[in-house]
Image (cartoon, rainbow, N blue to C red; front, side):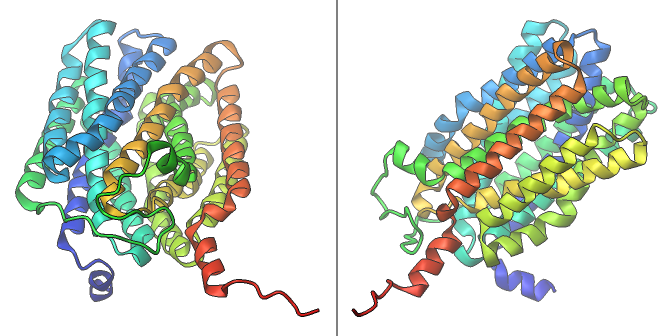
Length: 412
């Protein structure tokens, strides 16, 4: 099995990105699993919690496109290490602050450093992954994130049984700092750009496509990551609160909930990636979107804790598995990867920016958590419709048309 894996992924730097990503996922998982509860205990209203999440996302939006330029100037490796270490300082500072404005400022830089990690990591992966295994490579990247998101909440749950919630943020910062040092010492220099002419939208090295043309080429990926960012940022903050208020679960039961979501992503994203490489990334994304939105709709009617955990697991297996497929769908020349991943993460962050604000308003003034879940299901329904309209953007569809060759008109 290891031999087959090395044949698909011969570059050791890909695995080093996975290890760094695993550490980041643990750091994120620790911080995210306690964030909503911690702010709630500190007396912040749900609207304020939503606004703080929006500030975090605004930091991502503001730095997404500049991050592509920084990578071009300083290299993906250098940007990755710096962003890791920057994140470690921002998350460690979080529990030392009291008022909304200073917490908001830290959350902005938290988002800015986070997008630096994502864009750098994804640029390195897309540069080094073979075309025929891109979704498989990105699915393993998602698995590394998912493993971290499983371990992180479990660590946080154990940690907070005897220590204050605030200490969990310091543990998160320590892990992220170690990941930054690992990236600086172990990941090799960036590869020189190569041309991938068989991919639609590819350009010659040194020829810069316009931003609108590049955006149109990756529109399905951008919509997918927007929907996922909108959904993820909303449910991470408000699903535990909804479960405590409407379903009667305890605070301690709510903390491991993100781990079930990550477990679904962990177990199924690799299969989704391999299926996407075989039959088409966009086709698999469409199917997963249908499964995910059905799960969200069904969640409102569940009451038993075990079934709610199972629903979160299915949502992770379907909706979270869309994320690596949408990343693999960014099929352009390698010298454009820093730009496409920057645009991609800008849409992800825009979803994170808008989702918590809209969800908090629905939660407090338009019917509570159930209304929030209905509108999230509606968003995924629009995404599914979008993928049907633009189904020809799937590289598998385009390759099939090329292989069939031009149609020959019948003789009269």
